[in-house]
Length: 302
Image (cartoon, rainbow, N blue to C red; front, side):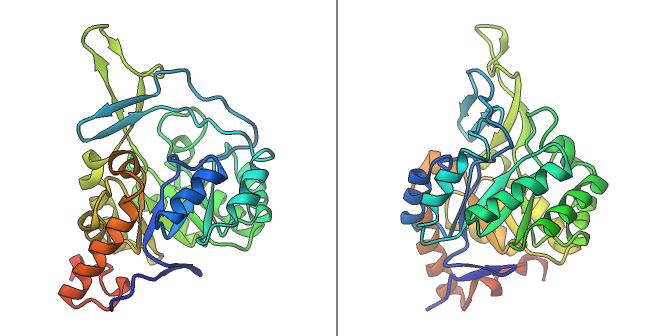
């Protein structure tokens, strides 16, 4: 039988699916539900130094082919999140702590806290497109990204993943900065800058006006980014954007991803999406003669 087990850095996963940050991941209870549903790993909500309420509603627009959201990085703060992490560690899968910050020093502080709480790896949110002073505003500058990753790596001993934005012409430069600083993996991509307008009220729908587009609408963008990154960097890539079935996952892996994350797919297909992806992928691998997921990584480049 073909094996679905994968290793990213030194992080071992029972299968190549992860829950993406931002969906069903602010409480230990929801993380445990996702783990029981079959995900190979779960990523927490992005957590900052202090509590944030986020933006007032509306914060989400549902489209035929995805969502536009501008949540504003709501979270309870790193100190309050300790209790959730203590309970979440009972997951049978790795719990990856997502963090956001406005400086390398703050990122290092948060990463050290997450490691103390039992996180199996750190995901640096360098790509949120709608929170001023955080995310994409930091993650489009290769020098800043290099400094952030280097300082986080010096502050903790667990793997460090950098989640990058497609909203830049410097994606490859940023990815190379992550690699040069010792990052263990790249997560690509976060949401694409977008806008929704109501014809009736003649205004943008989201309270923040602009937001981030996710779901099947951005899958071709995500695939292109992963494909380009695989050709230029030598650390693992986790593909994100529009993964809702086994074929989506296989396409990302063939483009160069070692694993995939599922976010909007949970809302659109339910928690069954993880088991469905894994069952379909295994059947495909056996039909096509792939003994392991690693044998599929990057075959679209051959």
